[in-house]
Amino acid sequence: MTPFVRETSQLALLDRNNVDTDAILPKQFMKSIKRSGFGQHAFDEWRYLDVGELGMDCTKRPLNQEFQLNQSKFVGASILLTRANFGCGSSREHAPWALLEYGFKVIIAESFAEIFRGNCLKNGILTITLDKQIINLFLEEVRVRSSYQITIDLEARTVTTPDEVKYSFSIESSAREKLLHGWDDIELTLHNADKIRAFEVSRRRALPWLYELSINDDNG
Image (cartoon, rainbow, N blue to C red):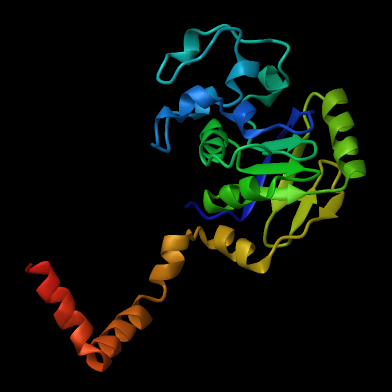
């Protein structure tokens, strides 16, 4: 994963509660298990006026101009602001894949579905929970201003507004370290490669018959 330390971006709005993973990436795009190709289909049924299918050219599809994220000032935004229970529904990991490829590195919400939040962490997306009052304040500021850029500092655990107001957020130390260093679960395991090899050597010495049995089984 790419290390995450700090991000500054226009704040993009999705002012909805209970956005489920089928809305984030509809079921017809689950045919592929590749991690790429999903960004253009994020929020597909809300984003476009026609029916989307995996692999189609989305540059020629008619956009739904009523959908918030289609507003021109949100193009290229890497921080998404939304409401409560974001990512509910099925546990599909395709949803974070789509959001990451769309360009979102941070999602701020009142609350998240727990499995979705875990999937975001595994894919390098920072999820931040803030109080409803702060969410409402941000929503109003984004609506009335032509530009509203905020800065997320993971080291300091702060969200800073254009007016230099800072809000703190909490995150588990282990999750913070993973994101700061860009470590996924495999990389964390490989940090203990020497210990794993040493264990295998000692196990082979202590229980040699297990390995002899394994070799005999392999030879039929």
